[in-house]
Length: 86
Image (cartoon, rainbow, N blue to C red; front, side, top):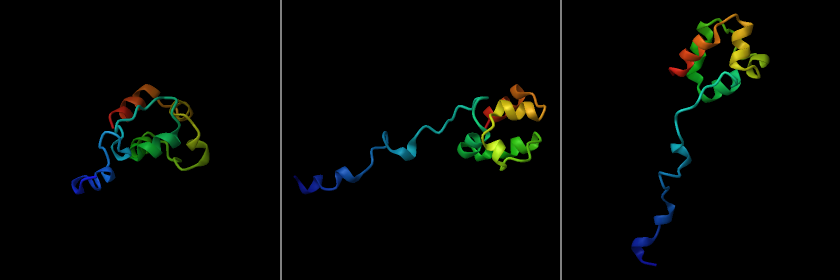
């Protein structure tokens, strides 16, 4: 091995580096509120503004976006448009 080859294996390949995983996330009506907030915490103000004030309660964490919209009397399609604009 040449001295110039030493350490070359220690650099991460940007194409396979986990830190560079795809940044866009598909938001679906079936996604739980917990999943949404874990992957896109910036969605919290949208949900709070729509009247979903118990984002941290256990029930909301396992509830889908569609279920939460129904419980709160919201138009799920309008809510999805706001979330997808993130």
